[in-house]
Image (tube, helix red, strand yellow):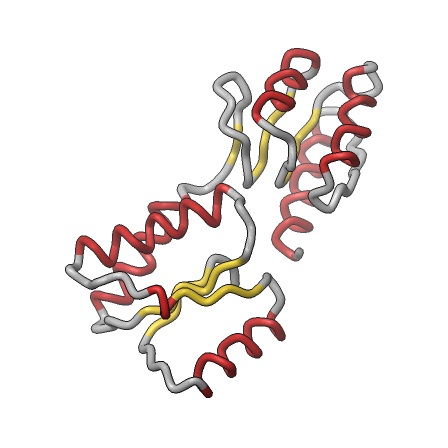
Length: 175
């Protein structure tokens, strides 16, 4: 994911300025892998963790944060004492969809991803709120589910268009 790679480069650069070295561990959303690395942290092998897109539960994250400084980046688990850095996902989606509506669009596709990430849920809320506040009925047929890949999005939209359903705008959870 090019977004995550840019974030990781920035984290590494800023950590280096403060005299820290970074170690990058990929877990691919597999909870067992995350638990493996968090055990390293709890055994004092890390000074802290910046976690992108965690699969840990609220309870696991809360327990981890008691043992080591933790900051979530982008996606986060909603635990009161665990700070996070992210965008205002609902507002960003609301603003984008509102702009489409202001430009005359009424049948706006919501292209989503089949996951339960905070960003996905919040962006869907923003999409729905923008429709509602502009008196546009929500239409399930305008919700398309794919993945983050460009080729997948092309295939999903080709299938959608060949089915004869019409739309005049698109809001996607990811570019």
